[in-house]
Amino acid sequence: MTGVGAHERRSVFADNVALFAQLLRRAGMSVGTDQVLLATRAAAAVSIARRDELYWALHAALVTRQEQRELFKQAFELFWQDPALRRQRAAMLSLLPSVRAPGQQRRDPTLQRLKDAWRAQARRREEPRARPEQPAEQVDAIMTYSAVERLRHKDFAQMTTRELQRATAAIARTRLRPVLVSTRRLRPDPRGARVDLRRTLQASVRAGGGAAPLRWRAPTRREPPMVVLCDISGSMERYARMLLHFLHALGRGRSRLRVFVFGTRLTDITRILRARDVDVALAQVGRRVADWSGGTKIGASLRAFNLEWSRRVLGQGAVVLLITDGLDRDPTSSLSVEAARLRRACARLVWLNPLLRFEGFAPRARGVAALLPNVDEHRPVHNLVSLEQLAAALEGL
Image 1 (cartoon, helix red, strand yellow):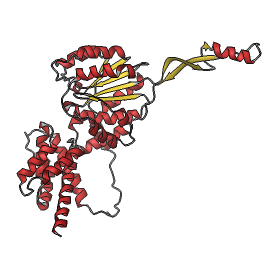
Image 2 (cartoon, one colour; image 1 turned 180 degrees about the vertical axis):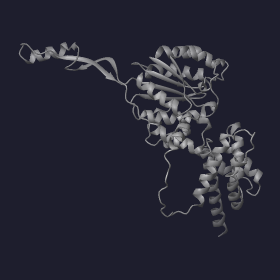
Image 3 (cartoon, helix red, strand yellow; image 1 turned 120 degrees about the vertical axis):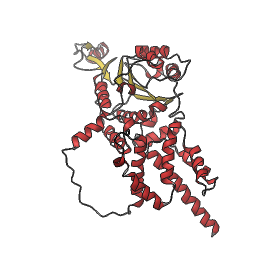
Image 4 (cartoon, one colour; image 1 turned 180 degrees about the horizontal axis):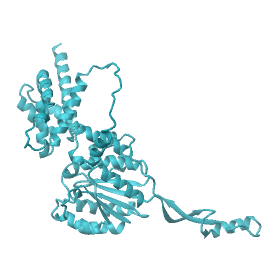
């Protein structure tokens, strides 16, 4: 019986580690399944009665970046405590915005997302499984428009967990009309402008050498290829997640879309993004991409694309979307040379840069200065409005 009880306690503790990781994910922290398994093993190797040992065991397994430490610390203090104190802390959190001093700065959006995630998880754990039906809530539509407008113009990096969920739902409803362009390949067309000599002669032979009506042909119209190179480094993490949602929606209307992500290396995720469920697709991307939220080597990544993929995917008027902030951390980068080579290989190179949201943006960074002369268009991409404008621009290309 003792062995059975110990096994049950280990199982409950493993479930708690999984719930803790889920809280971190809801707060915007990237936590993979392999990290959860490692955290479970690390926690089992230390004394649970020692909070400091448990803290550092979970910290070593789940924290991969310096800016995640404060979020992890706050989440640990909220989660790993007595249930009564936990409910008391949740009630205290709901009062925090109202006791802010007049001169105090705005709360960190990361901690705000943690608070929202904690409230959502606490409601799920305390709600009964079967809830009685309640009358539909009456919503005043007068204030709806302004709330939607604020969400559309709000920066992705400043959104709370609930706002991110609403934004991703809005992105999932994006639909783009296919853009067709003429190619050099010809097809039979009775309204075409060119005579199809081969089919005309064949018709004449079948008629016994007599006169036969002319056969016509016209250029084939098809969708041009689109290639996306998306930066997933630490400075681009929040924007990259939202843009991958946008690319998943974009892929439903385009058959010739190729998507690559890069941090310190280049990874093709085209097949992964074809999954019907966007959450499943992004989870697979997280498992496949080893350099997510790491460093940035833009020049090396563009060189890898130019050498390995350029001839295969760039052709027939291909459009390239380069999504990055241009902050290249490789001191030996040949970014200018590789960007110029990429520009020559495609019909149009569009740079999507979240740093353009700042009014005082200037190309002072070395990577930005190297990229800027080699692109056809430089557009901001940091909120829903910028994505709507991008979608309209893609339909007009």
